[in-house]
Image (cartoon, rainbow over all chains, first blue to last red):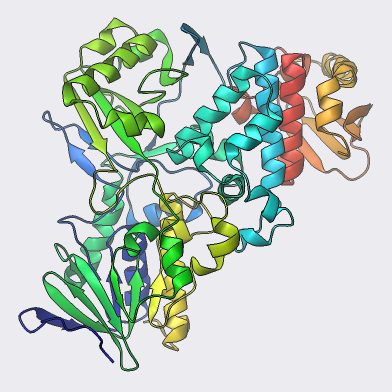
Length: 468
Length: 119
């Protein structure tokens, strides 16, 4: 029963057991798992590249820059295993020396994970971290809405929790910065339950925030997109680029995925997109209300990733890590993002949340000047003379529409959480937003690809033991 | 390298500072934990017992069943318990190994930071 008429006669037609929408890590991992089980797959990707939110680009002098997701951490077992299997070379993020903190117009340096300049502030921060970690451990990862306090936690924003539980202004600033850095959204945007789910999903708050020992520990010598490129290479012509999917039709006989360039007939469909993008496709029959409304309620974060390239990483000579945090300016978080051989210096900054939202309204010249002003404030006059300036706005990306991930405002987990992964007929859902471990990270994308592949093998009644 | 007597002195002082910290007692209320400490280079071992968020005792040797096992060199352990080194520094995170449940490890981390900060 096809209720809309689309002239597909002029388009190429292909057949596969499973059609996959989106060649990010989730879609490619699902394809890899299914292909290994002997299932025929075809991945349709709107862009002219694979990798989704991972994207590695050379600058004018050939320095490889990750303008998207770029780090993996020691407890991200799936990514670590995949990277080892694919033989991809990694190296540790530069984390030697002191960090810079800029507060109330003053610059200080400190070592360790938490600034200890003001013991009262550091004590309040530690207390908040412990309290949040203990609350997070009570959130069931498969079903966060079943936590005993879910109704209370999902009825307030993280800003409300900070107001009620953290008194030292300096500690509040640090927690706000931490939230902006993790979600590229503001504390008032996020459900407390979602923040707690995310903490549990990563193992703990310091796992999210840390460099050494945390989510920012390890980088890829040839860039993070290498992972997706290798997966796609192995899949060969099962990955089709430049195929923007706009409609998915399903009925008793099967499904059709319709893109600008080809029509794919298949038995099962995997939509490996962030929920908000999944909601922009047309479905026939239309999706149930709960599933569609979920896609209306998971906004993406807002972030500009900005990078300056210098002749060398000069801050290392001053015994600095290149990490700064600040309570003012466009860039409030920075990292050393130099290539592994140190042949160039690269300072990386994030313009996140509200700052990211206003940043895009400025001219390119104003944006560059605002970034350099911050880098000079944190690392001295040398930072004002980069060889090159590169910025990437993920909100402007038509096929992502924001980073780092889709998040839950209050009320969404409790009322819509059950619709996050539940298949609709022949359609299954993947993407890092559907992950239980390292949700929002590459590792979560990989988990979601593996999970959805297992779901489909069960639906097709193919058992993993039948793998050849 | 520190001697067993120096490490024991640091631990006894740590007990006094932990008991004096209002924040430790408030934040870690209801936390009971038996910790075994091993200074691996000199073979010295100790048992530190936490009851209701307060460090109740330090004893020589490994007594009873441990919830947490803390291993490091005599020098690093002495520095951390005297409060000379930031327990959250990259160096200390690598130098001191802590084995136990996630909850106990998180609570120990918090206690160590509160005492280091004089909170």
